[in-house]
Image (cartoon, rainbow, N blue to C red; front, top):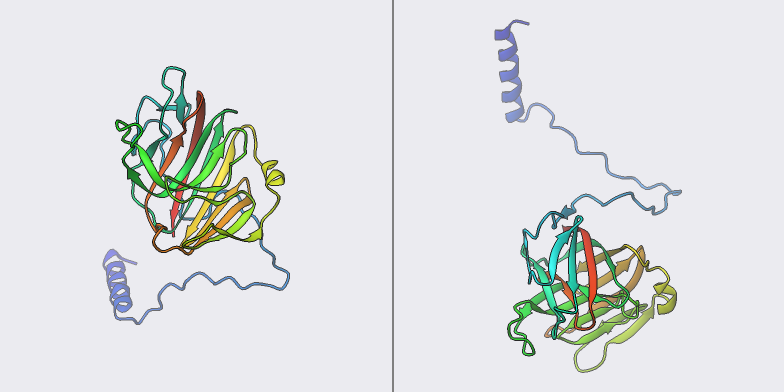
Length: 257
């Protein structure tokens, strides 16, 4: 075909498509379940997750550099004998205030350490240490080195214990959270927590807050208290009041729903 002929053909095809005379590309064939199909695990993340920590520096995060640094691709929070804190302090992601989302992150912590992943949180004044600009209030996926509290939902500077490890709860006004179901014995669930790296997976959708750790559901909270709950907010990670400690985080991935 001569060049003029090719151009004529292409121009005609484009015009025909614009006029709706050529069939558009068909969408991918929808999944049709078979009777033999069962749910199955996947390798890696589902589509839609993006990294929110570059592993090289603190770009996109804000915290006190006395306690936070990047080392070997990890976000490191450390308290030394010279820098013991009187108030919990956080480093906070500056990329937004997600509403419904999934968050995946890996962590490891020293035996005496105490930390946590805060979400749907706000910055608040610190009455104990007024110079601390990085105090937060909000939901927390708890972490401690002795795994007494790891996995639970604790509302920092708020309503405190919303669900202990192994509980599905409903939070209502005017009383303690109500236990709806048991997800497992807390001591048995603790055996799924490693002394080295662990993988947290938070699924936060509407007023249902699910904490998964190393593939095990640790807590589910249904927050039915409209005044107390938050439906969006900041993400941050914590170093806690207590003895010298070190916590490391890596591979932060966020998927907004």
